Length: 152
Image (cartoon, rainbow, N blue to C red; front, side):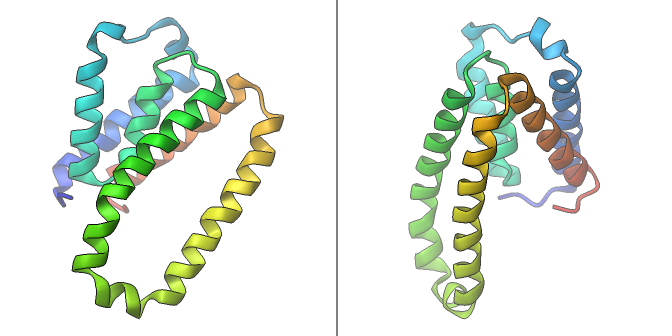
């Protein structure tokens, strides 16, 4: 992960713009052509790896497609799982002491992830696709603002 302020700010501004595009409804009318999927996938992985915010970039890219919310979540989850499966052994190997020293925090984080998953599932069942897409867009905008202000 790169700690370049300029890259974070540029990515943050891009996320704000793309999130606003989706939240305003412009995203419904303007879509990237499917022929450049490989470019979007490559760039989202590269930028996510450099800055460390793959989830936000992946979400913006997936919003480009008018896919059902179940497909959106399944796709994002599979990609995130594959990325994490490749990273976790490195974290364990290189950061064993840090992990051991923060076992309580790690446990709380894992418990919060499970709680969020269960709560999200309940919410997910109650919202329409349009509201779901709006929630994602708002989340992307918030991450973009935080990156631009270099809070994350």
